[in-house]
Image (tube, rainbow, N blue to C red):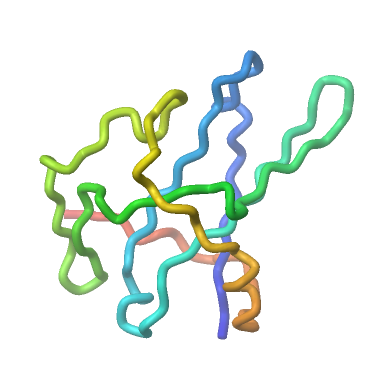
Length: 128
């Protein structure tokens, strides 16, 4: 089984004075058809002005919720979005995530023996 990955240069988004937040939205997509839970692994590599490198990775300290506004989605049926469930500031510092649950360790998903491969195609986007 193959697991696609993408790389992005986020240099211009990182604030040097702190206050950085990483938020990930996961859709069910193909996963819902195979019975698997959507998962994400992230590694953010930061090289400081003095040449030191720091890696920030997903682990069990990350939290998540299914209570967001995207209720369903898949490639054939589109997306159901309930704006009453929006969480203002969910990807900002200071957001109260106390009712969110701890994420599973991404290494659990690595044990599925996926072949990790760079994604050679553009992501799916609405065009009409």
